[in-house]
Image 1 (spheres, rainbow, N blue to C red):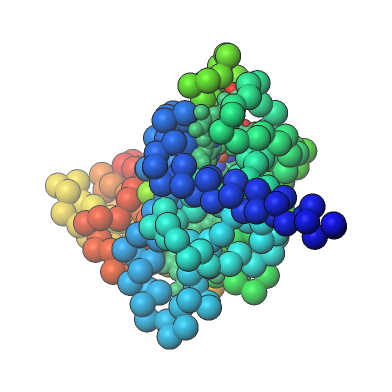
Image 2: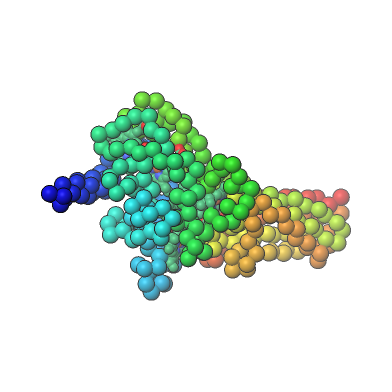
Length: 316
Ligand code: HEC
Ligand code: HEC
Ligand code: HEC
Ligand code: HEC
Ligand code: HEC
């Protein structure tokens, strides 16, 4: 009798999970959540599998299915466990970190912050982990066995983690919009854009520069404004460049310093660092230009480095 009772229920649940996958594929999530869909669609989460940089690096790993793919095309993490190592999905891999990965539970329900409306398509479950989602993010961005992809531990030790601040403070800005086409009213939500190193605006907020110019040297003060280790990824390099130009604009000297995981000199959150360039001797009328630039991968040519900050000083 017990088995007779359990079996249909188990089937029901599997069906509801299956229906969510099907609905995702057929564009149902998109049609009821058009605004959130558009935000997600352009994010790196949507591209976590198709991303060419990812595929190129992963193709060099022998057992990528065991070591890499599980976070770039994961099963729903509410099902495999928040904080647990995600498991590789067998379908819809091209959807990367899809809506279902962050929201779908084993019963086919959608977990999230408090909702204002209901739908026949899925049950809504209010779950407090979404309000300050650092723990949710840490499932992929803070796995203890994958330190290359860890933004969470440096964040947790910083002032950026105080109070109710979380990864969402900087990567999911607050927005008022209809959560779905069936919602009764616009309520406070958070943008599903996760802008990171591909966003010039985000990079411009990452660090600040200050200069002190003396006749025989230039002191550059660099302060990180980023909520975690900077640069956040192990593939990235930040270049600090100092140039000395004559009054006519001819380059007299150029120095570059790299900051990266490879150099083991990444900046901690809020860290202030002074670089002294004591081989630069400027004369009156010279221009000193200091730039902070972002290199996405070691192969990114200098012409494609992104300007993060710049200070120009004319020597008087
Ligand atoms: C624990 C989950 C997890 C595992 C396992 C994992 N990744 Fe990632 N990967 C991430 C996260 C999160 C990011 C984004 C944050 C970052 O770059 O640190 C990322 C980003 C990347 C990027 C940067 C992509 C870009 O757009 O520049 C590459 C390349 C990459 N991963 C390769 C790999 C390879 C190769 C493996 C296996 C050796 C692997 N990953 C295993 C979670 C994971
Ligand atoms: C028939 C319309 C409809 C479809 C289809 C639909 N949703 Fe929803 N969804 C809603 C409504 C209505 C709400 C509640 C919105 C509100 O509170 O204003 C909602 C809320 C949500 C929430 C928040 C839940 C909470 O409690 O905070 C998530 C997450 C969600 N949907 C994801 C999805 C995903 C993923 C899909 C595709 C598998 C999907 N929805 C398909 C109508 C729909
Ligand atoms: C299921 C795994 C997973 C979860 C959960 C997850 N991420 Fe990611 N995230 C990734 C992967 C994988 C990438 C790398 C995509 C790529 O570049 O190929 C990524 C990339 C990013 C990026 C980089 C975007 C860029 O432009 O480089 C940001 C920012 C980000 N995630 C923030 C978050 C935040 C905030 C949360 C929590 C709300 C979160 N992620 C939850 C797997 C995850
Ligand atoms: C990387 C994890 C992640 C992915 C992927 C993701 N969400 Fe969310 N979603 C969140 C978090 C975290 C919140 C809570 C934001 C807040 O506090 O308002 C949220 C909130 C929501 C809400 C409530 C409205 C809001 O903005 O708070 C809806 C509806 C929703 N998501 C639907 C979707 C849909 C549809 C997709 C796919 C197009 C999707 N989510 C993809 C993490 C994710
Ligand atoms: C105070 C704002 C702030 C907070 C809080 C914050 N970030 Fe970031 N994040 C940034 C900035 C600025 C960048 C761009 C510079 C860089 O690449 O590190 C960035 C970049 C990233 C990247 C892209 C790294 C890469 O190599 O492409 C990921 C992934 C990321 N953050 C994840 C997270 C996660 C996960 C959390 C929570 C533990 C978090 N961030 C908290 C500001 C923040």
